[in-house]
Amino acid sequence: MATAKKTARGRKQDRARVAGGQDYEVRYESKKTGRSASAVNKAIKKVGSSRKKVEKCLGR
Image (cartoon, rainbow, N blue to C red):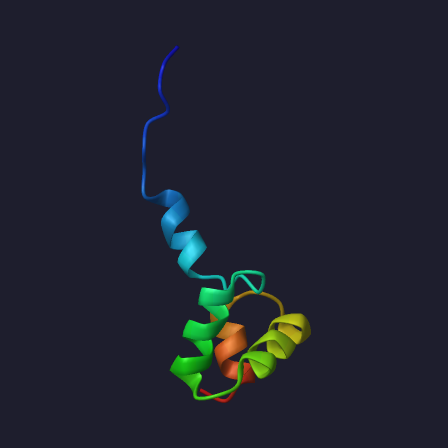
């Protein structure tokens, strides 16, 4: 069985999103923007998981 070739393609896409279910990602974004974790979760629900949109919504 051939092993899959490892590329960085998925990594960049992953960094562009905030996983609301991952506590450490919410904490990171909370610390980065100076807002509470619940504010980050509300922003994710409101605008989606795109990091740019979440940060814009949080006023960063």
